[in-house]
Image (cartoon, rainbow, N blue to C red):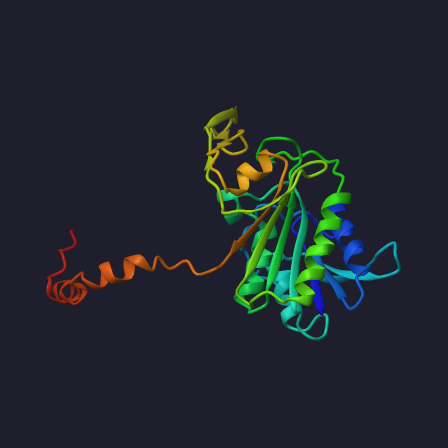
Length: 276
């Protein structure tokens, strides 16, 4: 199986290096790395469309190498799809992220975005993230992590996926607690309770412009049984299946009952207001 490793913390990040070492030890895996050249956290599904991208081959301590780019995590997956590592990968593994990606926060995450790009392209994917401490949203995640347990579990998960491939439209969002996990739960996405505020930081005396902080304040969460947030709060590994179909299917029939044709007819026959 050809595996692409990527992340949003940068190619030299400790989490990616721990994952790379763990996956290279699995027989039968062809492991490649394409990752941003520096931190791209919270870039979500952004792509680079207005300029060409640099790519540089970076040697690793074990004698192997990977590709670093000044693009985003999604760009990294696109590079793999377009042939930078030869044949297209059969599995995308994104992480291990420095900080959790739980509940509503996954929509901001570059780590999860790279995995989502995999299933958009028809390649199954796994997103891996580790909580920095016993609580919190990891907006200001600490710099020191021990990825020993999370890398070992990630290798076992990839080994299972290699033997029993995931469907092409399936993404597994996996989060690890800090330290030794007490168990594993299959979960659904939980609900963050954000406590954001608009806090004035300073004012430019010459221009009168104000600088504010509006993100990064410690949120809470709904402690709902079976959610990823609740599992991590209890020091358990959370495994959440995610798909990309955003269609609200129960609303389709209701909307079909609306007279859209009548709206269109009215809109095209109504005289436009006179401009003054």
